[in-house]
Length: 213
Image (cartoon, rainbow, N blue to C red; front, side, top):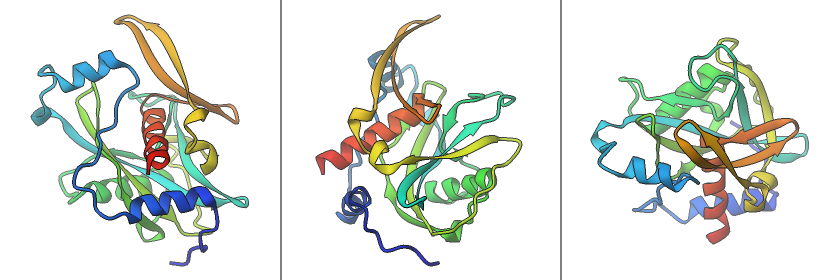
């Protein structure tokens, strides 16, 4: 594969972060809502019962700058319809690692060939109230790689500038009332898209990690 020599300062920060070497203890990703954190870390959802899943955080040079590739899910899906997400999904029996899962799902959802991705590394896991343990994988996409949304799962593919995605100030905390009570979410708005929930939590965690490195 061919790839542009990185010249963007935010990408350089990302590359330096993963070039630090294999970290033996990856910090788990926290939900912005502490009630949710307490629930997933309590005996209510013992870790042995969590189902594994993985997502890809794809970085690509797009229209003169580096950007994160995100998708908007189709409205007819039974899980999180219409929401913004990373390509990814649950681990299949034949998957031998979270990287395998993230790349396989990305090929299925946005037509991204696995060989077009240079994997930079993984983040800590995010435990979900739904019973999933999600591992985010960060990868650099080769230049000029075409992306094609799966009509069944993906309504739109769009790009968020890396400098925006890696800035903790881009996110706002929003308190909302749900049937279970008041909850706190992270949100980012870009080009008409509302990025929130799991996707925002993962991006915010990555932005924090880069800022602290």
